[in-house]
Amino acid sequence: MSNKNELNLLTFRSLCDRCHQESERFFAQREHDPRFCYELFRRAFVHGNQQAWACLYEQYQSLVLSWVMRHSLYTSLGEEADYFMNRAFEKMWQGIPAENFSKFPDLKSLLRYLQMCTNAVMVDFARWKEQAHLWDRANQSDNGSEELDPFATIMDEDEQPEREIAQREMQEILWQKLQAMCNNGKELLAIYGYFVLDLKPREIYDLYADSFSDVRDVSRTKDNFLARLRRNEEFKEFLDDA
Image (cartoon, rainbow, N blue to C red; front, side):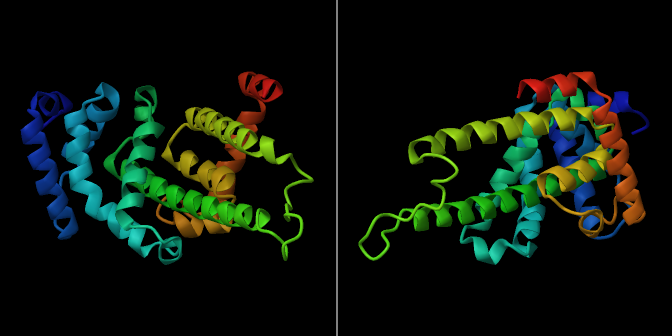
């Protein structure tokens, strides 16, 4: 297989089989060729090929499950591992529009993004669970007296769901804009850790040590992105209108 044109000529079935074979060689720590699985990702995201996506789901579900079950939050979430696995694949599918696929130059960067999605859905679920717990407590009676509502100083009870929905929608739009401005997968990891997970550079490095040379590399990547963000007139207009 000498070039991309030859990869393009492979049938879906042949490509899926080769992806499976090369993945087995990788996990056996043998010499392998990642281009076949990468081509499946390309067909899935650039061409919307559902067969390619189904093959990738089958190929990598055990890997995602292993990430889920090794996650520090997993045992406290009270949900099946399959649930988070499916949410991770959904998040990845929704998170890479065709025009952004070129920002992922190889299979490693795509799998790193899938791992990032796995972490994100688990962190989001933990936050949702904590918010639901606080909301339940806020609606419990205090020894039969008037209901305790610690959120009352923030917003009226009737307004809470609508504002939460609006805030979540705005956060999704903001993240999509930030993601579109990333030049590469490395920047994507840095700003995801900074904006979404609210991590410090040291924590981002600990999470994605294989993507950065050191903590200063994380800070430099983040700072360069933020400087570019501050100069972006379109983004400034978006914030003014938000």
